[in-house]
Structures are given as structure tokens and as C-alpha cells.
Length: 330
Image (cartoon, rainbow, N blue to C red):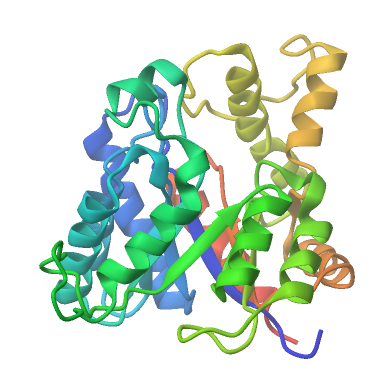
């Protein structure tokens, strides 16, 4: 790769066991402000529903809150799960955000519901689902584009704001659609590492320039546990292991403190599944993470890396960003 990728963050607003949502969101603000100070490019919030331990369900509300507490960092969705929402509502929400924080809002779109079928029905989009995703994306693009003569349905605010759309994915489908539509593409390597090389190659090989984007622009999301030493990073990583284990077991996803050993907490099969899920996890001190990033970038061409940092202690989580920033220096 010729130039070093930009660094960004994905935030799930994970609730620590025993904490309130209010405290969690205060910590998210401090985390975003620290990322901005260090020169991170974007701060994206994920959409999840009906998951105890994750407080980013009202994604656009949180984007507005974070954007209002920062000055320059781009803030967006990673992503809005479009099957859950009428495109008009999303166009109005993000048109409002773009009007409040001009030039700082990103609209990342996902095709999955981000929840279970019962909750998907509770979100009142029953029967439409993911198969309508390409039409919904096109609808959203036209609603955020310039008003057309005789246009019956207008997003006010929204029309003419041209909020940049991104497609997010963990398979080849969204890579192909992003390439065909000339949109930037983000691969969800933080939870689905298996197809990252193939998806990013499909995207670059098939990219068609568009009004929004002349050249392909790809981002890869990866989990990271940066610390002052490799041993400390291994210790801190047990927080993310416990959360993924809880996810597999259908248990609440509260963020738990790190433990000295995972022995007895998981079976051999569960350990293998968790490590597979976190296959792209970067772990260690600045020097080792720098080397891991170098090895990753030797296998794939990306313009941006987006990190998920599952660290229990909010101060250590902010300090992890200092360590990531160090890896950018030659």
C-alpha cells in the first residue's frame, strides 16, 4: 500500500455490568472527544435492538449527541439497518443532522436487521426485509439528492443535502452492490472476518464511478486491544472474549471486567468459535500492533481502518487510542 490508511472508530455504546445507559453515553462522548483530539477521521455508531448491554439502538439520536459534543470528527452510522426503517424517515433524520453539522455526517447502511425476527416485526417493517435493500438504497439516494420537478414525496430537511452513503457488509453481496452503485464500502471484519479479502477485491475489481465517488474507497473494521504491554493486552482482551461468549450463548452482553484466565469459563469448542469470530483482532503494545497492521495491509488494500475497542475501563479505553495513534508514526 502506498499511503497509511486513516483511522476511525466504531462504537456500540456497550454498557458495563452495573453501569447505567447515562454513564455509558457520557463515556462514549469522552471517547469520541479523545479520538477527535488524536486526529481520528470518523466516529460511527452501530444500530442494535433488543440487546441488553448495547445502548446504540436510537442511532441517529446518538449521532446528533456526539456531533454536538465534538467539533471536527465525522460522525455517522455503522450502520443504519435499512430493512428496519422507511427510507423517507432516514432521509429526514440524516438531512436534519447534516443541516445541524454540515460536512460531518456519514450514512452507513446495512442490509441485516441488527436484531431477531420478533424484534424486526416490532420495528414495523414486516414483510419488506433485506430483499428490498437495493431499492431502498436508491430511494434514499434520490431523497437526499436535489429536488426534481413534480417530485411527490420530499425529504424536508434532507433533499439536496447529499449526505454521503456508505454500504456496509460482511459478505460479497454488499461489496458488489457498492461497486455497482459507486459508493464507498466498509467490511465488517470486527465480527465476520472470513471473507474480507474476497469482498474487498470484488469491490475494487467491479467499481463503477458515480457522482458521489470517482475512485473506490474501502474501509475495514477490525477489533483491537491496545495496551502498554502485550501481557496487559492479553488480560484486557478477556473482556471481549466474555462478551462474544455471552453472544453465542444468547446471554446479555454486559461488558464484564477482565479476568486472569478464561479457563473454566468456556469449553474448547467455544474458545475456538470466539477466536474465529475475532479472527482479525489486533492485540498488544504499539510495536506489536504496528507489525500486525503491516501484515494485514500486505494482504488487502484499504483506505481506512475502523477499530472496535472492547476495553472495560473507560480511561484505559481512551488510552488505547493513544497507542493506536502511535502505530501511525514511522
